[in-house]
Amino acid sequence: MSTTSSPTSWVPVGRISGLYGVRGWVKFFSYTQPRDALLSYQPWFLGDERREVRLVESRVHGKGLIGLLEQISDRDAAATLMGIEIYLKREQLPGSESGHYYWTDLIGLEVINRDGFKFGRVENLMETGSNDVLVIQGDCQRLVPFTLGHAVTKVDLENKVIHVDWDPDF
Image (cartoon, helix red, strand yellow):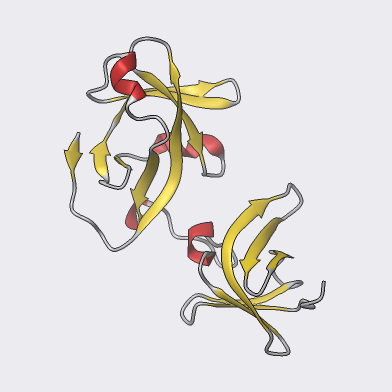
């Protein structure tokens, strides 16, 4: 594993969530859609130090993902990686299509309704099955469906604002 210089934009794509066997394999929790897309990116960058690593082997295992990282050859070495976030450099990701956004681009944006009411900033997003939901932190926490053309009228990444058609009392 080597340490890399810090680029301007990192994207969290998963984390190491468990151990698998005794030969250094680990389980991954993926933030990507589809989940196994995580396995197609190389290299990965681990933790706050952004240590560069490569997958030697990997596969889908049941509903999860497992893999072997370079220079990890036993369970003890793998255990030191538990809970570590997996990052990619922004430029490793494909560009998003018009009307599609990476969650990481939406977090931190200010949310304003058509009357100028400022809800606060996007703290996180939730996947509900039918649509994603913005988790907004301001004077209180609010949940707004991320439905473009309905609740969300405009996403302005340049000005870091999401415009919504949503009642603040809802």
